[in-house]
Image (cartoon, rainbow, N blue to C red; front, side):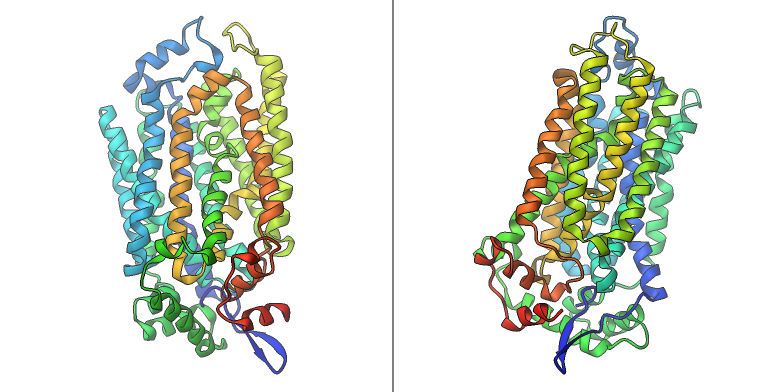
Amino acid sequence: MAGGGFVAAEGGRVRDYSGGVTFSVVVTGLMAASCGLIFGYDIGVSGGVTQMESFLERFFPEVLRGMRSAKRDAYCKYDNQLLTAFTSSMYIAGMLASLVASGVTRRVGRRAVMLVGGTMFLAGSVINAGAVNIAMLIVGRILLGFGVGFTAQAAPLYLAETSPTRWRGAFTTAYHFFLVAGTLAANVANYFTNRIPGWGWRVSLGLAAAPAAVIVTGALFVSDTPSSLMLRGEPDRARVSLQRIRGADADVEAELKDIARAVEEARRDEEGAFKRLRGVGYRHYLVMMVAIPTFFDLTGMVVISVFSPVLFRTVGFSSQKAILGAVTVSLVSLSGVVLSTFVVDRCGRRFLFLAGGTTMLIFQVAVSWILADHLGKHGAAAAAMPRSYAVGVVVLMCLYTFSFSLSWGPLKWVVPGEIYPVDIRSTGQAITLSVALTLSFTQTQVFVSMLCAMKYAIFLFYSGWVLAMTVFIAALLPETKGVPLEAMRSVWAGHWFWRRFVVLDAKQELDQLNRM
C-alpha cells in the first residue's frame, strides 16, 4: 500500500516500486508533520505560563503567596490541583477525541480529520488568550485537547502511508521534529512575554493560533492518502493521489493493486477492528499498542517537557532564567530529533531504542543524586542548591532530553505507524494515542504533587520505568527498518516469541522478506 510500497518477486529478485522522494511527497509530508507544531506548542506554553507571576496573580493568587512564603517546601511551591488541571485537561480531552477520530478517519480520511483538529485548536487558543476566569481557561484547554487528539491520530498515519519505504522512518520522524519545534517556539515566546507585566501570558496562549492556522490552511491544499481513498471506495482519486506522490516514473498500477488487496482484506472482516484485536493472531499488535505509549510516557519526558520551567524554579533559578533553561532544553531536544532523522533508517529502530534507554537511565539517576545531595532530602525552603549544581541539573536534563529525542521521542510515532496492518491501523493508532494521552493527563495532574511527596526520588521512579522499557524492547520488539508495510507480518512471524501468535495471510510474504 502507499507508504509501504510493495516488494514483488520478479525474475528471482525483489523489486521495490514505491518510488522516490518527489516534491509532492515532501510538501504533503511537511504539511502532515506540521500537525506536531500545535501539540508541541501547547506542551511548551503551559509549563512556562503556569510559573509566570502575572498569570498566577490573575488566576491562582494562593500559589503566588505560597511561593513567597519563607516556610514553603522548595519541592512543593506549585502543588495546587486546580493549577495543574489547567495543563492536564488538554490531555484527557485529547484522549476522548482520539477514540472518536478513529471511526471518523476511516469514513472521511486523514486530511479531513487534520482539518477538523486544526480548527478546534484555533478556537481553543482564542478562548485561552481572552480568558477572564478559570472556567474559560479549562474550556479553551479542552478544545485544544480535541484538536490534538484529531491531528495526532491522523498525521502519523498520513506520513506512514505516503512516504517511500526506504525513508519512512525519516518522514514519520518529521512529526516529532515539528512537535519539538513547537515546544521550542512556545518556550521562546514565554521568555519574551514573561517580561510584559500583567498580560504577557495572554500573548503566549494566543500565539497558539499561528500553528493552528498553518494546519488549517495546509489541509485545504493537499489530497488524502491513496490508502484512505481506496478504503472509502474512490479508486480513481487514489490513483491520482498515488501518481502525484510517487512521481511520473513510478509503477503506480502495481502498487495500486497492492493497496486494493490490503483494503479488500480489511473490508472482508466485518466484525470490527476492536473485536479482531482480541484474536490470537493480533496479540502482538495489542501488546505494542499498550506497551509503547505506556513506556513512552513513563520515561518522565512528558512532564519534564511541560514542567521544566517549574523544575528549574524549584532548584533556585529566577522565572526568566527558568524559562531560558527550558529554551535550552528544547534546542537540545531539536538537535536530537534532527540527528535521529538521519540515522533512524540506517541504524534501525531497536538500536536507537536500546541506546537511548541506557543513556536516559544514567542521566535520570544523576539528577536524582544531585537533588538529594544538594537541594536537601526534605526540600526545606532554607536549603539552597549551590549555583554550580543547579547548572548541573540543567546540563543533565539537556543530555537526558537529547537521548530521548534521538530515540523514544520520534520512534513512538514511527513504530506504531508502521507495524499495524491496514484493517486495524486507524484503531491501533487511536488506542496507542489514547493510552499515551491518558497517561499524560494522569502525570501532568499529579507530577507536582509527586514532586512534593517523593522529592528527589521521583527521578528514581522514572528511571525504574526506563530500565523496564529497555528490557522490554530488547526482548520483544523486532526490527522493522526498511520493511514494506505489506510484509510486516513476516517480521513478527520470524520473532522468537511472537511467531507463536502470528497467522500469515500467505507464505509468500515470508519468502519475499527472506529475499530482501
